[in-house]
Length: 320
Ligand SMILES: Cc1ncc(COP(=O)(O)O)c(C=O)c1O
Image 1 (cartoon, protein in one colour):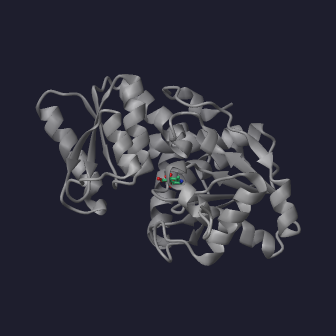
Image 2 (spheres, rainbow, N blue to C red):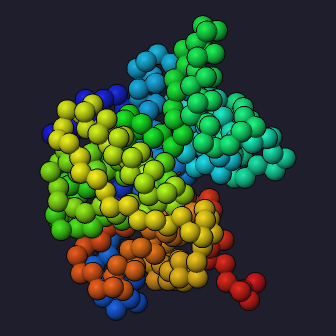
Image 3 (cartoon, protein in one colour):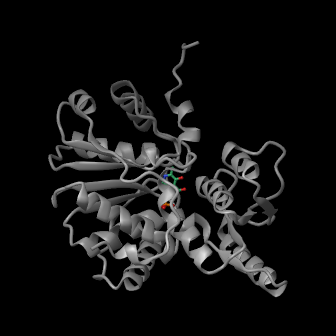
């Protein structure tokens, strides 16, 4: 039984996403057992892994009778952009809190949020204050008689985590063996938290390595274990065990090392796979490093999308 079936869900994507082996990449590495879980093909706009939490968040917002969804994120936030598109599809209004001041030339994700009709509110402050700003705006709207629904940045809450708890059920149905090692990038932690809650619910023995791209490991541990525990409580399922978290915060968001760039080119050249510089390439590099170090267990590399920023990574000097 899938414990997420008891919750409201608004269908956006196409599931299950494909899971397939990367034989040519394995050959180039001289060994290993590497598979990719294609959430980049989740099928709603270019939302990638964000499609999963959004199905549950929008479902819950509709069940709560909300008229407007309030969330936020940095101008390059893939989540905020995907949320804006999802609210539009569901006939809900969307307000996004954006750190800093108004931008003359918004980056692609913010431009997509604008195109989806989201109202932007520039806070003048930094990213860390956004969740407080979101809650304040929801209270303001409620005081004005509007039914507003708060979504913390990244969808990092128990309802958002249901998306990846459901993904764990999907993976179990795809026949992934207990000795598999799952590798995925971590930003807000919603995905990895849901995955470990779902892993406990289905009783799978997979190891889960979350590659943290923007926040220190200690902070991420606290964040992911508390969201996972809240998600498991809401599903009435077994208590989750922590993921292994890997620090990939150096050299910084969207900055890539030479090794990461080489791996992005290798994945493109052998399999035609595109990885973005902020998230995907960090998980790819971790998975390929495991193989280079002799791992023989099946590795499931979770491709989370981020495609709007993936193409510059495969640019080559001298090509014209
Ligand atoms: C492309 C991509 N991959 C992975 C993540 C990380 O997901 P999470 O925030 O659930 O940790 C994000 C977050 O924005 C993302 O945009």
